[in-house]
Amino acid sequence: MGKYQSIISAIISAFCVFVVPWLNRKGIIIDETTATTIIAYIIGGIAFVWTAWKNHNITEAALEGQLVTNELKADEEMDEEPADDEVIED
Image 1 (cartoon, rainbow, N blue to C red):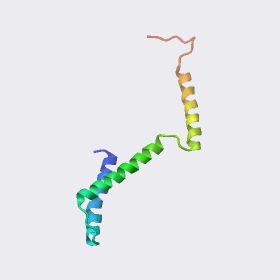
Image 2 (image 1 turned 45 degrees about the horizontal axis):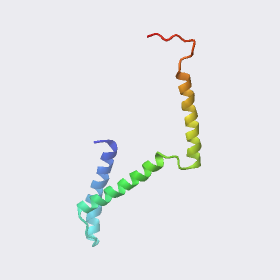
Image 3 (image 1 turned 90 degrees about the horizontal axis):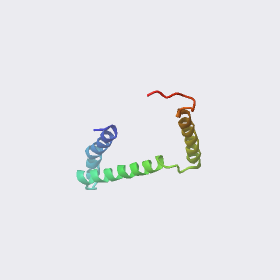
Image 4 (image 1 turned 45 degrees about the vertical axis):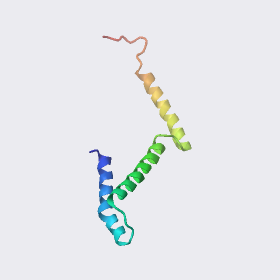
């Protein structure tokens, strides 16, 4: 099990062990399966929003940063190409 899967599993387990019984004592009847499903949907939604935000340049600063990154990568690719006068040995 990966790091994030372990964290998610721990959150769901803690919720089912501590929060569900407390809710049941307060009169809100909820079983572990429903609680697990709700938590899984919440975590999935958070993961979706975080991934969408992280992998897309939404803000102006992020767009400018991507331009700088693209320029740096283009410079590195040009540096890696052999010069015309270099001898390439097989």
